[in-house]
Length: 254
Image 1 (cartoon, rainbow, N blue to C red):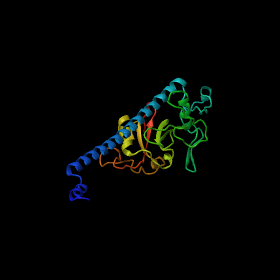
Image 2: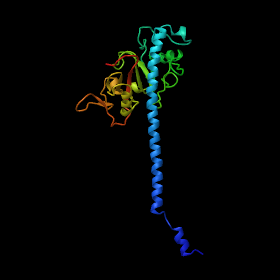
Image 3: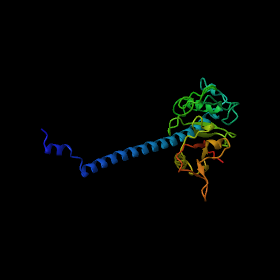
Image 4: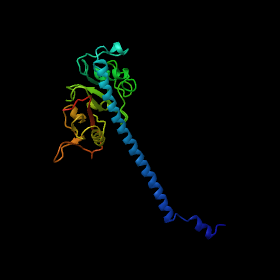
């Protein structure tokens, strides 16, 4: 038989003190998760900067050792078995190839792909990338580098005439970014630019680009013109609209 005392005990709810304790615990858990996510993201940004600097160093070391540029080296196969030779014209270019797409698979044809094979075959950059023939769709981590910032981001080396950037500039974006998709949020682009250069999207050695702009279109909202001062990254936009052009060596972008 259930007594009134039993019923009173069963229906008893949480006290205000107990609810407060639960809310405090939940807030600590949520706060911890948010902090962890921020820390993970920050570590990826820093890892990306470290990687970019390692490419810059490897690029200069390659030129010092072989008196040639990776990708452009005309006798690469003599040093690296299976490598494809560049045309030796002193810049990393298409060597008669170009950028193409087929069924959504985008191709980098010639020296911009061979760059990664030459520089990793020389042991100057960690890993081994196999972009040694004009045949294969871009596969980050196999024939082009996988950038630490996020899955699916990679890098290409472009010469003057591609998207208006100078010779031997590393362009970070998605494999299809050159044809209309961005890879990086403006806030991330700003952070990388600030840590490596001047924090401005259109000056120095780190350049902010939008994918439409690469083909002569409007720069969307990767950056904008404030009422006063120079162009600035649009950090209020969380869309991945930006790519980054980063000078190799001592080159300054114009």
